[in-house]
Image (cartoon, rainbow, N blue to C red; front, side, top):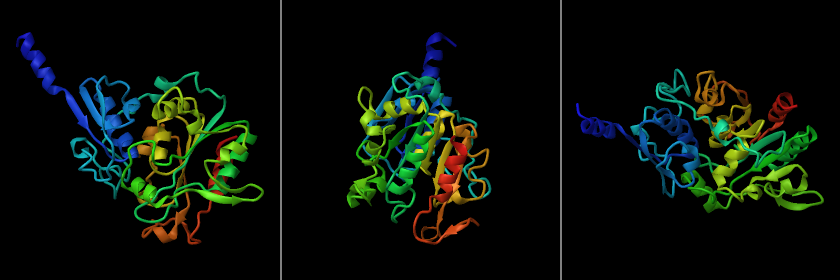
Length: 318
């Protein structure tokens, strides 16, 4: 076979990936596939802001303004894994086909001195409509106050991030949240009515993530911060997936969903594969939003109970 034919054949083998699923789904199903096949992937077409997650690819096109929760529409049927809950979700929940799946070495790539605050804890939060009902997978102001107080007392610098869903392309749940004007607020004695995003300003060593976005774009900034972070705390979902990419302990607060299935956080689950076996689930199962609680102790108060979460934080982070 002559050189020209070999070149033509190799060109045909080049892969183009086009995908715009939910943020966490992309990090679980698309980026590990793209990295594993980095020698073959020629072009990646993704959502706006995602280029830092594909740093090894020279041709990343941020073409999508919105994401979709429809996996087929998102292009996942073209990948080895098209369902985040596993190849056989009833028997082996969250266990994927790992034959073409390799976690990119983000910590090595993004480690830096620009955002080195010493001992760091990164707390991610969210406040979105979830499967059509009111939010429960979030941290309220009292729980954040308790976390900030404890972690600062232990000598940590805390980074707090809670997007307002205007920073990046949204999926349907995030769009609904914006339309409803959802916000985390509380009346604080001696202070008045404040938002969770106001709370960091009352602590010397707690930083609102938005205030640190300056020299670099949103995702590059958070990846550089996360590469220097010692511990992560997050509600379950895309925030936890992102937190698991940095080879450090991740405490995730789980209130609902298929993540309640037995062994969903087992050693072969994508959560543990992403985090190098460092993902620690804390369950607070809200009864009124779960038709199936899979044998877990159920919280029927209709309100979040962060007691166990705070206990785990104090046991894991010293």
